[in-house]
Length: 231
Image 1 (cartoon, rainbow, N blue to C red):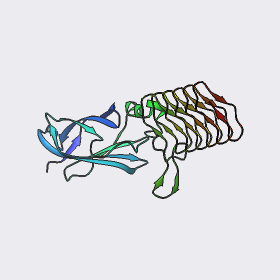
Image 2 (image 1 turned 120 degrees about the vertical axis):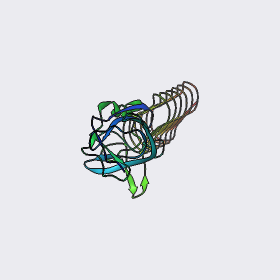
Image 3 (image 1 turned 90 degrees about the horizontal axis):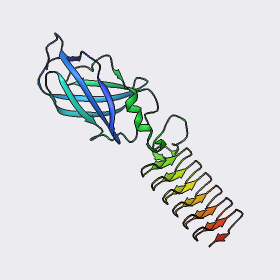
Image 4 (image 1 turned 135 degrees about the vertical axis):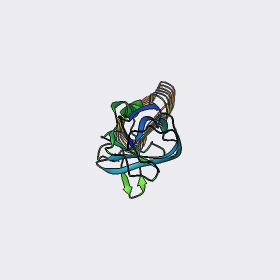
């Protein structure tokens, strides 16, 4: 195998959800530009620790230039892109190319849609484990949704928002849950301000707080307190 090293910086940019486009220019050890198909192994490193990798067994290299799209084999949805990452590339059976390439700012745009907090392990809001192997991540399942923090929260409809708390679900169109515990806003434009086990299922319905309250009528409101219903 010809020894190949980078002769210019490899750049990476976000081109689609959970994908990274990588372009590079390769030469061999004496400056000859290669042509043909080569096996390329890509790894992402955080603090010199490999946290993600994907192998591309046959990448076309033309006049030294290659283009690949990462994330098709090994999903990138477990990468928060909220810390510095370096890209490592290995060609065939050679040693990994040195130095590794820091990801440019464009790759961090993956963290912007819906304040993306699907997976975080940096000690901040958005990810926790009750026990090893039992994650409770926040999820943003639709466009323009937002989960601000907490754990096990879900914004599953367009422009739905969960501010924080635990086990809250904003499933209505433009529905909002500010926080609290096990609250659901399933009506379109419905709101649960907080509390626990509250449900706002009517269109433009509101539960201000309290416990086990339900606002299931259109434009209905429950201010708070235990076990009340608004119709």
